[in-house]
Image (cartoon, rainbow, N blue to C red; front, side):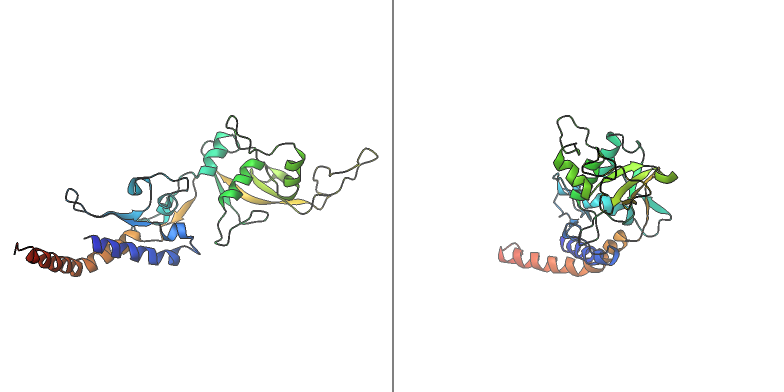
Length: 252
């Protein structure tokens, strides 16, 4: 049973790159198969989470973000995902509504890692620029200091309904224009307007309903097929090994 569980685990891991483009190691190593015990003669196969692994991690458990696309293929419709940590933080600070979600558009200046995903540090930058950290004593929000202003001049995000667009999260693009005022204008730039070169891109849509995903990764079908296909062979192999051990001990 344990050997068949490991075979199913390997089969699912091998299929991950087929369904997920350029998965990171955290994802490819996320499949787990528990071992049977005398008081629990079964094997659990799935993605790592706090229940199966028995420990807590600061990283998002793979089970949370793979679950929507890992339902049984026979089920109809699409699966809605739960709120991400970033969304929960933005909700707490009032940047988005209690039941709202954010969906990345892929537009600049949003930055992605080599695997095509938004990194945790990028999400932190977005929250900071939006002043989304509202925990007492937490100082990661963008401030009015010179250093903070320099950072915002190169990478800045804001929420609004510019030009009648839907409420969303926007990122400024282009270089900050030089001041164009009279004698009082010594340095820096003035507020961005349609007449100046610096504009913005929509980087996150804000939606009132959870994003839904096609159920495209038939994990249970893969696990069941592999487990059933290897169980007979592994059972008799384990039985033969145990008989050999018992004969040496003189019990048979």
